[in-house]
Picture 1: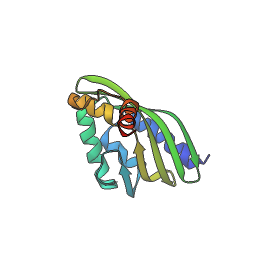
Picture 2: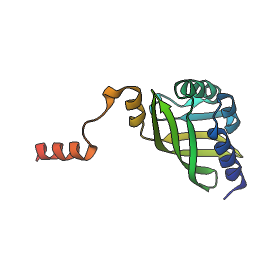
Picture 3: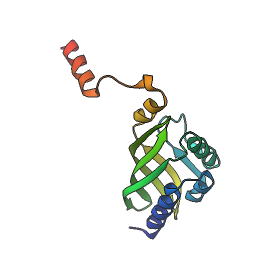
Length: 144
């Protein structure tokens, strides 16, 4: 484990425990990018604070709790759980962040999570009445 990764995880954990948009630039280099599911393109570092402000406006109690992490060289993975109240509903979901470090700051972060539960909390009509497995089985039966 590199000391850079350990320092980054400490700062990441500290910032996400009580997120404030103005703290997020502390995690990134000036030329860094961030990509979350559903984004049309990665955000440049100067867009990240505004993005976090928007997210926190919709879910002011949002916070993330790291569960574990692993690093090799400049590549770091942090496994976490996000907790928030969205549209009056308390929800949580797992996330894995893939982080490319340059020193003890990120040059790139890509988050991996299933945003479906979040979308359903915002717009209940997006709820699915079937599981993926049942839909696949149904399609296979029709094709067979």
